[in-house]
Image 1 (cartoon, one colour):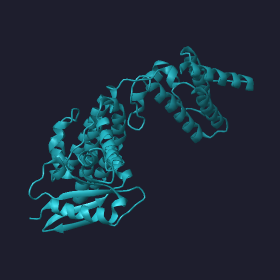
Image 2 (spheres, one colour):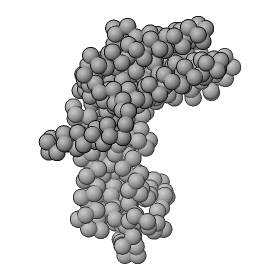
Image 3 (tube, one colour):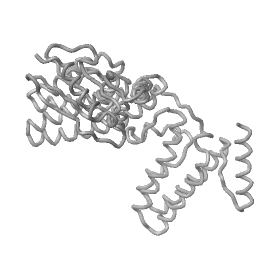
Image 4 (cartoon, rainbow, N blue to C red):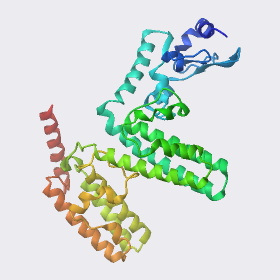
Amino acid sequence: MSDVFAVAKLLMDNAVKNYGQEVDIIACSGSYARGEARDDSDLDIFYIPADGKNPPIGRTFLLDGLLFDFWAIDWNTMEGFASGRIRGWAFAPALVHHAKILYARSDDEAARLEGLKKQILDLQKPKARPQMIRRALGNFNSIVAHVANLRLAVDDGNLTDIRYAGWKVVQSTWECLALANQVFFDRGLAKGLSESAKFRDKPAGLDHLIQTITTSPDPSQIIRASELLATNMRQVLRRVQKSIPSNTTVSKQFQQVYPEMRDKVGKLLAACERGDSVAAHAEALLLQHDVTLTLNQTTEGVGHSDFNLYSELAAMFREFQFPDLIKFASSSLEELGEQAKLFDERFRCFLSEQSVDLCELKTLDELGQSLQRVQSHHAADN
């Protein structure tokens, strides 16, 4: 059995001797970096080239039957791993978090890597919870897409496609859970699946559903389990979504918003007048969507239009009795236009009641005075 550290030293010495000024960091990751290596563990050793450099020192090879992987990871990719924007949050941060420096060109490069490790820790703190939950909500769409692919595969009866799509459902769910729980795993998915206890919030029957999806020979069982997993996952996300309080107010959220909304009303009315029903319906939906989501953000901390059903976002919209333009989009254009005018009237009243400036100016003098007031307030605040 080869001495893995002797191999690592040979690779590192060759890199430093011939390309020392082009390599910022050489480090190991994986089981050796974590102190969990067995006799048959391979050695993952990587290097970070200096910005703009690409030294030809990367090697992947088998020595005495053992895998050695000496690969380049540039700083942008390392930053993507640390945030989970590249290869996902569930596993990629572990490579950065556990990286053990074997060589650093200078203290600055070592500090740069330590800074990425700190970013990972920061993303696990309570302050980052709203951000991570938003990412989890956005990731739910991938679960839905893979369930849809699984349905197609089941309809075709191709067991390989069924297995593949089922695993994609599991992978997407795991990523969603990792984000929502602000945890990542040190090992890959195959081993990480045994560590579901790390999730505080998780779907009912998670382990059983995953086992069914990945091992059942019955396509009907696989699709049922996948759909149930997606449904249960959505319930988890709705629960954690509601746990985040809003940190804004109506007056702050709607500051300088009315001019844009009035412009949207104008475009809606113009589409109605020229008889363009598709454009009118689109303008109605966009207008109502923007106002609804902005209102929602004053009551819930992480409203998400690509995750939520409209009704889950619209509590304040209904409370203030704004006309439902989306519903009236099925009516005549004349009726839709009248409702748009009513919407504008009520929206103006609402903002005035909340002491929100409508930002309506008539002359350049008024604009100048407005700019001066803003400057004065800024100076006073500072």
